[in-house]
Image (cartoon, rainbow, N blue to C red):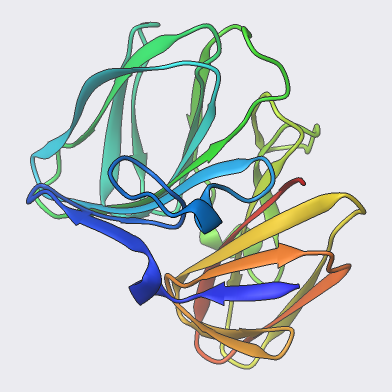
Amino acid sequence: MIEVRKFETLGAANHGWLDAHHHFSFANYYEPARMGWGAIRVWNDDIIAPQSGFPPHPHKDMEIITYVRKGAITHEDSMGNRGRTEAGDVQVMSAGTGVRHAEYNLEDEETRIFQIWIMPETVGAKPAWGARPFPKGDRSGSFVPLASGLGDTGALPIQTPAKVLGATLKAGSSTDYRFEPGRVGYLVGAEGKFRVNGTEVNARDGVAIRDVETLTIEALEDSELVLVDALK
């Protein structure tokens, strides 16, 4: 099954400093049919105004992955970590037993991010944070693990048996991705227009994938893709 969830059907909330769109139920957006997808609980498409951001707030027992699409995000947390993650790069936070963090756009331009929450395999783990650059050229033409709880070399570690992958495709090119049995996928394009197993998809649409062995993606325009592969 492949279900395209058009961007205009997503939950939305504009707070002035934050223009948020929710692929799944979140905060004041409640849609019983979109409570999550397998172990994936949240996928937020956020635009953060310059010199603003999320003040310190707590989380517990959740794997939180931030993919920066434009600008940069500056992270601070109660573990003493601080870091700045730029466009195309990724940060991860395992909330575990509990952590407070803040995410600020300290730039003079808007910052655009995908924030993805995946449920952990076990509760009460030790909190952790990490970030690293992922040059887009290194994922040209195929999916590369950006964050993984399955031991993928070079990926940021998360505490759940899932993968967050990225790919860039030139117009006219294609790539395949194979799912193991018992897993689901959720795909969003940060940029571009493409086909997924023959179905046309625009940037920022969501593609929910279940009971599909092989995903074939054909780029109709230059495209930047983010895919999560998780347990059902």
